[in-house]
Amino acid sequence: MRIRGPLGVSRVARTRVLSAKEPRELRGRAELHGGTVGAVRWTIEPEGEGSRVTLSAVVEHAAPFDRAVLALGGRRWLRRGFAEALAQLGRVA
Image 1 (cartoon, rainbow, N blue to C red):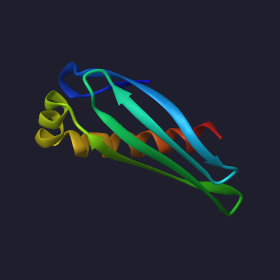
Image 2: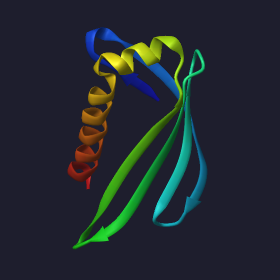
Image 3: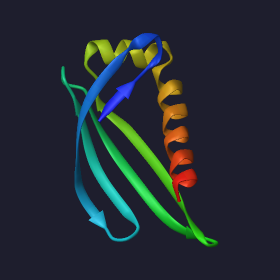
């Protein structure tokens, strides 16, 4: 998965699903070159005629470059990016 950030910053994350509780939850891991590692979780709950999807990510270890990016506003950017990704899911359905 390619993550594109502000100012042309771009990173590739190798992702994998570690567990699934069908049809409600996926848990996985994202690893970036340099040693940054994060845990990712998608939860899916029925809501009306559709579903509510929640995405959460926790940085378990940040390499020095990524630690600096997160400290300089990267967390806010990631939060907005996740929200936009989820909004796009809603438009696709």
